[in-house]
Amino acid sequence: MDEFVQTFHVDWKLLIAQLVNFGIVLFVIWRFALKPLMGIMAKRSEEIEKSLSDAKRIERELAETEQIKDDRLLEAKKEAQQIIALASAEAEKIRTTKIEQTKQEIQKVVDQTKVQIAAEKVAMLREAKQELGNLVISATEKVLAKKITSAEDKALVEHAVTSLKDHA
Image: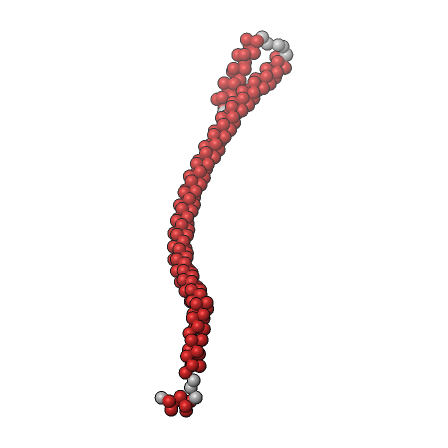
C-alpha cells in the first residue's frame, strides 16, 4: 500500500480532509439545495397531477353538460313541433269556424235581401195597382165627365184590380 501512496503521491491527511470537505459540501448541497429542490419538484408533481385530474374531471363534466344540452335541445324541438302542430290544428279549426260564420252571415244577408226584394215587389205592385186604379178613375171621369162617389170609386177600382189579376 505504501507503494500505491508513493506511486500516486497520495497524502492521507489531504485525502481525509477532502473527504470531510466533500461530506460537508454534500451535506450543504443536500440540506439547502437538493432537499428544497426535491420538495419543490414533489409539490410541482402533485400540482401537475392535480391539474391533470381536474382537467379529466372538467372534460367529463363538459361531456355530461353537452349531453344534457343535447337532450334538452331535442326535448325543446319536440315541444316546439307539438306547439306548431297544435297551433296549426287550432288555426284550421278557427279558419273552418270563420268560414262557417261567413257562410251563415252571407246566407242571412241573402235571406234579408230576398225578404226586402219581396216586400219591395209587394209594395211596388200595390203602388202600381193604386196608380192603375187612379188612372182608371181619371179616365172614367173624363169619359163620364162627372165625378163619381167614393163608394163607386172603390167598386170601380176593385173591378179593375180583379180584371188585372185575371189577365196576369
